[in-house]
Length: 292
Image (tube, rainbow, N blue to C red):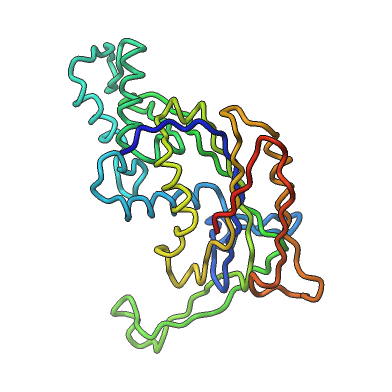
């Protein structure tokens, strides 16, 4: 794992789309695609995309030191936190009547947090709250994602589906069972993200980690196929690279440089080709890199 420090601030815009799939179901709405009730625009949460990034990194970096994934399905996080203490037996613990494990000295708490950052890619990237039960501190991650929002209003649709098999013996007389499937016929979504160089120095997020993040954003849907998600793909990735660690222009003004408009002749968009993407001129001290 590279130790080369990140010395530049970054922002980025990712355009991704879905065809006949559910990019992010809402469990409070019967798993219908998430939608802004006021505008009709589709939504995809930051948590949803972080999961896909984690899965991709876990796949391509399996077994490599420094690229373990902290937040995984079925994992007991306190057991992972305890590994940090097991690797630092010299740390003095606070006395507690409750079943808690916590370092007595502040510098030891920082040592534990740094160990966790070095071991887990997603902690040094997105940060983590590790203060429950077995306390390894709290880490602010340098990479932050917004909710993704569709360019145009989406049309969440439900269809009936049937299954020839049955679940229970008592249902064997039935010919089939019926269910429902929710999907978006087509939607183009926009994700905006931020990368802080000062926070990257604190967590150890390196230039190599940054390259892996770009690769994950481009390829995260390629290994996340399912009938529920239909055809999903990253279409465009624009990166704003500042010449300095603190930045040379406000992020919101840089995001405005990337404009996505539905073509005039298109009434109902059904593919990425139905949109036109334009990019303005970057201010002094900022470079625009089109990675996809």
